[in-house]
Image (cartoon, rainbow, N blue to C red; front, side):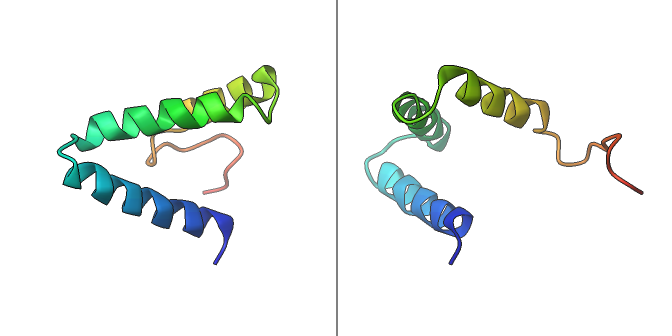
Amino acid sequence: MGVHDWARQALTTELQAAEGNGFDEAMALRALLSAIVERSKSVRSIDDLAQELQFLADNLDDGRDYAFMRP
């Protein structure tokens, strides 16, 4: 299992726990994202983290074509 598969599995487990505690999925995801960003600041530079978050935000649309991609 790769680290990304592990992360998806861990997320699924935590979201099930959040649901069991009566938390809305959207709110649980926001809380997890905030906690991950906060923790990431302790092991990465703020600029590096900001660049990665900006890249992820810029690439949210799964159906978007990118100039560097070939058809």
